[in-house]
Image (cartoon, helix red, strand yellow):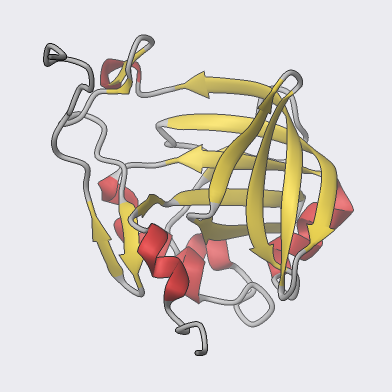
Length: 186
């Protein structure tokens, strides 16, 4: 029996982020939902990236990248950054309506109006097929939308409208907080 082409959608919905890398006139952006922490000591995260992608090429050159958490007001930017090729569209940032600014600890920029940013230095890129698993050392992480974040639980649902990618152009939003362990065991 063949594995269905859509098998990975069984793991969705997943938060969608904007990944930025590059420098000067050549800055790239892509949308990624396959992003996860992989170590706490040292702090590291992983992003699955298409090895043929422009942003991946820029990341390999720069050795740094930013993971930008955005809210649903960036839905079109997420869609465009995930569907337009940086090899074909010269100013993908402008076309997607994304403004960037300086980061704190890395030389590559971050999304100017991001809700939160994780700044990374490339540690390793593992070839895993048509994608590379890019593992970065986290150099800094900060929340800019502080009214929507709580250090105990993370993002405050209802205020932090982080788009979750379903498939294709379909996204959804988190909407309900469920706490485990609230019922007495018998």
